[in-house]
Length: 78
Image (cartoon, helix red, strand yellow):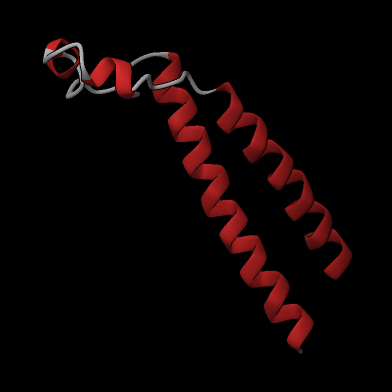
């Protein structure tokens, strides 16, 4: 059981890295801050399409990582 959970945790870790790298970049750097309020116009909109999907996938994988880590600690302590 321990080895199965450890394998699932490692697979989940790799999937989290891939999901985070696939998310579109948010260009909030110094150059965009100096351009005025134009970037603030669309900053309050909800993500749609691929961006929303990737945010949900990342959140689900993060929760799964936390649950697997807790289960692994519980099993290894008993």
